[in-house]
Image (cartoon, rainbow, N blue to C red):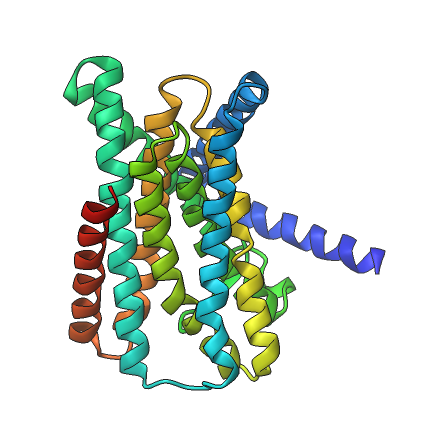
Amino acid sequence: MQQAIKQTFSALLISWREQFNSRPIMSAFILLTLMAIVGMLLMNFLSTHTSVDPLFLKWALIGGGVGALSTAMGAAPGLIVKKLPTVTEDTMLGMAAGMMLGASFFSLILPGIDVGTALTGHALSGVVIVIVGMMGGVLLMLGLDYYLPHEHQHSGPCGAGHQQVGRVSLFVLAIALHNFPEGMAIGVGYTDGNLAVGIPLTAAIALQNIPEGLAVVLALRRINISAGKAVTIAAATGLVEPVGAVMGIFLSSGLPVSYPLGLGIAAGAMIFVVSHEVIPETHRNGHQTRATMGLMGGLFAIMLLDTLLG
């Protein structure tokens, strides 16, 4: 067992080196971004671990827990539903994409610009801070996409070292890759205790997790995973969200500029997932119109939710 783990890790290192050599400039930017985010996280943690308001941390954990629970709720019907019409799945995922986009703009980008503007005294500077954060979020997710082995339903295995990982594990890693920025966004949303940001954001992510949870179960069942195991796997991947929430609140605490930067990082990561994964998945079967209508419906729902809860 120990020898097998060692061989797998060695193979992964070789795959990562090959991936770096094939995209040296992009990989260098990704590495620098990762180092900056990790450094920012550690600096904030070391300087604020005794001063982060326990109430805000509690809210972030509850928000992450709500996200995890909503994923399980969406997965539960998979115990009796084995297949849905493809057009229905694409419409559901389109709606989830619209909700993620709405949450990114209304609960992350716009509050981030407001905070950055108040911090610097200049609207342009506030926008630039959020843009820098968004670029960091995109590069973070791009790095995970390049270097974390995973598998999407239609595009197949991808990421360095995917040959060394079983198919079910690849699916699980893909779902975790999707859920992590959502959890991080929830944590960032509660950083300064502003419930007008945190609650609508949590509600938006929880709502879009429901169709996503069911879509994940159906994808697992298509590769002959039993109903109970598929639901358990899908529900368990939701546990990434509370972890992401804790990381998010510490990432955006500490230095005043960390908060708008954190909002930008979370927004960039979520928009990357929508554009890179969710929307292409909904367009592969020729149902672009229905998927787009679903996206617009999800966006409208988040506009209403943000107004009602904000």
